[in-house]
Length: 495
Image (tube, rainbow, N blue to C red; front, side, top):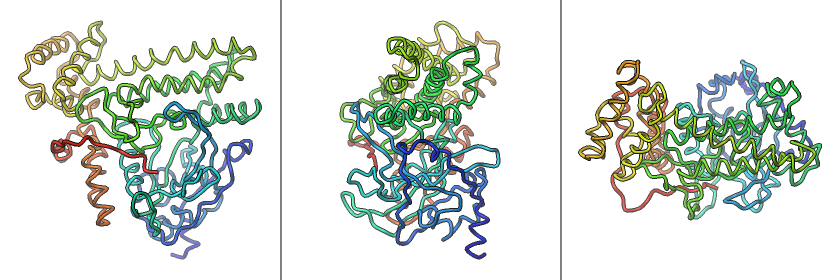
């Protein structure tokens, strides 16, 4: 196959709608070429779903594109500008180490961003080298694909290449670039940037673009004279309430819920210091820089509401020409977040316990179980897995009198619904993952790849995570807990 034939067969079908926004929102920027790109991971099933030819992207041809050394026909690389509250402090930001090469139009007519992360310096790099290292890029690949398999909206990972150029952090590390796929990279921080730097027309252009790209039906909701920008705010609130509830239901700790990491599409983005909780504890924090616990597991719903309030502030000029009226509209919309989140969370927890219909005392039953899990440091995922398979003697709660009393009340609750025990167990199987990307398993995969160039450990882990609700015997190995350690597990942003 010749080089030109490979390019033609790759299947790229680009459009560049973001580049048609006002120029304050981006800088045209090509990736900085690297010395010796090598493709180390390619998500073949994702590639095919995007309309790409995975075979044509294997080897040097794909590596050159995924490293930014070659720009596919129709692409228009750019770095996006945005702002954000980072740990509560506002700052101007932007793609300091990423380039959006274009928007792929899939065979189904969907539009998705193709972004290279770690592709070199941009005007927004603020002194950084614009590069990324292998471990964090593989980490994002593993966690984002696991989230997708869990049914949680997320950006996804198409490929990882090594660059052949070392990157200096605390020590010399292997340079790498991740190809990230997203419904878009529009963020709350993009709107904050527009509100701070742009004029009214530019903010309106951005809001119109977000509506057209993510909420095309919003105009139908406002046909009777409603405010389409208020509809945008409500739609983003709705998606974020559902998203964060899904995080809580599987024990996912994002770790860096800055406003620039909250998407308008409702996808999970930025897998730097994230991790999954082992022992249930609302105060769980993994990020090495979150010393105050701002983004702890139990705080995630509150931070979600705080971030959405910043989004509403940015939209105020569009909500109403009278500022006082605009604030009232925004406050009314934000007030709905807590109820929506709680509704999604409670419905999800009922499903995790096999409950089909609501009863008034359900929440108390759920919270009592969580309290017992916290008291006994019971593993979050494995406790629900054991309940699913009626193997509660295998949990850390076994033998506790309070837990035995709880079990009796739960069984009585199940007996009051019309559905059979088999139906309840099936609901639990489909609501409680057997496997999650355990932190020690992720680290094991990264160490093998970084130190030995062995990606088989990662591939086996990805295979186990591909169908987390299967509850197969083959997954049992990945359900095991790590050996006890005196040191708490810590994650890092990977910049």
